[in-house]
Image (tube, rainbow, N blue to C red; front, side, top):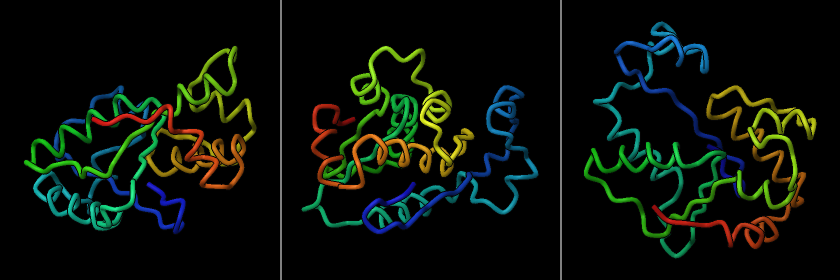
Length: 163
């Protein structure tokens, strides 16, 4: 994740300690060995606490979390919070960038992040790893809306939802 206001970035893997399906490896290139040293599921509660602190606890400010093809990401996030019996903060809202790009650029052949990155020749390439995908998406948004957070926020209003 990246906070566009502060520039702070947060990324981590979770050591699932189990079998990694070959299709998951093909997509993410994550191996059991590459997960060594990362927190396991027992440490997820602490990890989420750190995530909440990192995002910020000022409930007077709205936190917009944007993801590309967000239904998967937000479903996983919600399930993680539910499993730990934690509530998603009331000031969090979510937006899927695919409908945003479909409205901005109707008629493109595809709206996959890798296609958009190629089409708009962004320097940050998506790799199906959280931080590279976030940096690619950020570059696409800045190219589409400029670097004004107010313009980005106003443009996203119609796409925001809660989970």
